[in-house]
Image 1 (cartoon, rainbow, N blue to C red):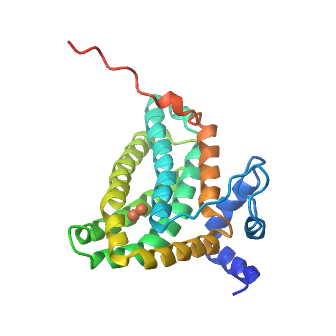
Image 2: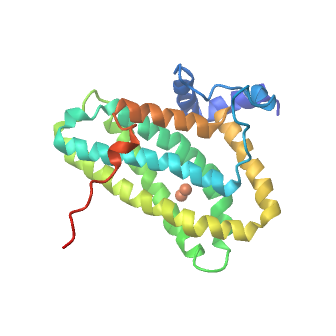
Length: 251
Ligand SMILES: [Fe+2]
Ligand SMILES: [Fe+2]
């Protein structure tokens, strides 16, 4: 399938991905704008050469993007209880949209549910027992994302929805932190052991093709840029602010 046709189909099938990508491309600081052709020519002077990302590394760094979205949800829940006016609905909407397009439609449906879970289900050990729970959590996550996208349409969060929204955000964070941790430590290693090294390399290349098909670009870079914009808009981009205070002196 030629690139133009593939992009057309991608645009039709994944309108949400287009929203995500265009939002990033319109940002002057975006680094995700290099075309595939430009990438093939090698790094620009002063730029580091791109290094191969393995299939499991790919899945785990996608979790990194989703964890950053969870941080936005957690901080939003805290601020909602302090003063709902501190939480601009559009920042939450952008985060939920990123979770939908990058997390649910791509990472969960296109990779985990298509390639990872069917293999892990037949693997030895404890990993298969997690698959049905992980699938149920994907479904619950999508219900919560639907709710978030619906409640953030308005200019402000209705006062009588603030506590419910805060609780929903917190319960989603709690679920997905555990979900991603089990995948990182049990499910992905079981999958890696089941497929073996040569198939792992093939699947790594396939995952990259799927990413390009869905996003027409480097989906990870696009999502990362998008996440950074959201964090900046909410004043959450300074890692140092999250350093824990010193503990009380033990006696
Ligand atoms: Fe998952
Ligand atoms: Fe995952």
